[in-house]
Amino acid sequence: MIEVSIDRASLALTPLVITGNPFASGLHIPEDAITWPHFDTRREYAPDSKWASGRTLLAAVQDAAELPLTIYAHGADGAALAASKAELEAALAQWSYSLTLTVDSVAHVYNAEIVLGVPWGPIDSGMVAARMARTSFSIPLNP
Image (tube, rainbow, N blue to C red; front, side):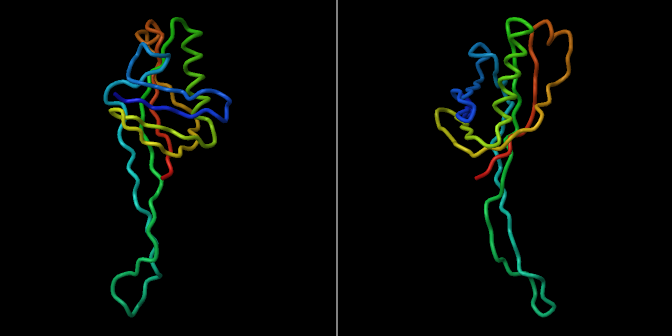
């Protein structure tokens, strides 16, 4: 089981919980639509020296990462679809928030940042008939 929970306390709302179950709410995560965030290491070195080989490491810290994610929005009609899309966009437009990624009942909590402009995918007759829309984006995370 995979679940993404976006804290919306700054919006005075309960967390937005998105699962892989397309019938649970107006949003769901399709199979193979999320990967683990990869936190790289940021290093700082002393200035190069003409008299010494190599370089001297001064600092190393965990750098920011991104959580790539694809989500489907859906609704019983066009208005419900628009409401599902707006709910996700508002949750991701927060300046900063807690994001919890739960995989097989194990929760991983991250400090997330604003996602500017959620790019909704192509509009085609199948998606319109099903009252669905798809978006793929990355959520910036701090360790």
